[in-house]
Length: 206
Ligand SMILES: C[S@@+](CC[C@H](N)C(=O)[O-])C[C@H]1O[C@@H](n2cnc3c(N)ncnc32)[C@H](O)[C@@H]1O
Image (cartoon, rainbow, N blue to C red; front, side):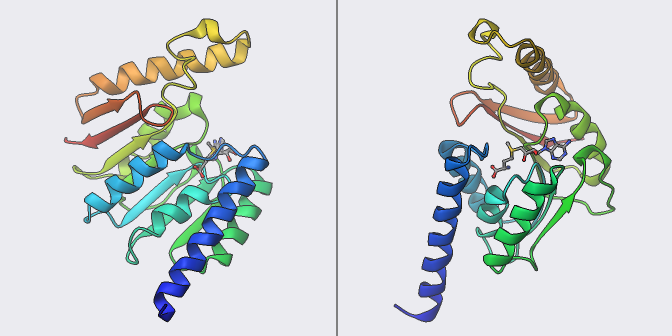
């Protein structure tokens, strides 16, 4: 095996270890089918270089996205100080600190002049509409938004699956957001209910 292939292999092994560790510690990283779908989308859309992620957790999805092509960069936002510290360490261990920049902040407070090619929204589920509006100024016609967890384990469509009041309130907000997004004239949106935990891809057209 040549040096490049060896380095790629060990990066893959570290990512697999990171995923295993995250799952063991109940960190809510993206589901495998959702991740595979997102990575295939990024591979197909070679024009995507600049990504913003809301909700870093331990850096798993940011590392997977930045590993698609060497010229991609990811800004990723995490509110929780412990998650932030773990993400920073994981990104450093993968040698990706020059291409993945992680901020400890409420995503809805983050300000930048950067225009992104894709914005991956995976932070507080009740705040998706807020993130969408907040980051409109960081988009251009053509920018993609990807929203994960629009089913929230089936509870969005079947609130009776939960007896927890705050979960029911939160999933009602997701349902409202989903309806809003599918009718938003600024975007062309496709909702994939059977992929991962329900993913929507919305491209800004206006
Ligand atoms: C579903 S996890 C992200 C998983 C990650 N994208 C992955 O697949 O590897 C959601 C993360 O968003 C963070 N979060 C929640 N509210 C947030 C906010 N307002 N701003 C930034 N991050 C937030 C949580 O602390 C949590 O780590």
